[in-house]
Length: 57
Image (tube, rainbow, N blue to C red):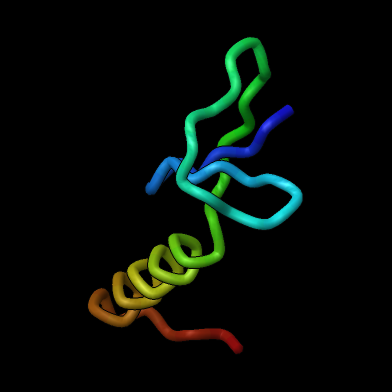
């Protein structure tokens, strides 16, 4: 199974994340690469701050 970032389409391999085509015939599992994950969590946090929700941490 090969992991592919659902935002930037980078694929994960033994060296980390790289922009390359997914291998044919391999099952894909979607996730987030570290860069896209950080950006997405920033957007989620901003959503809650803008809507007056409190951060419970």
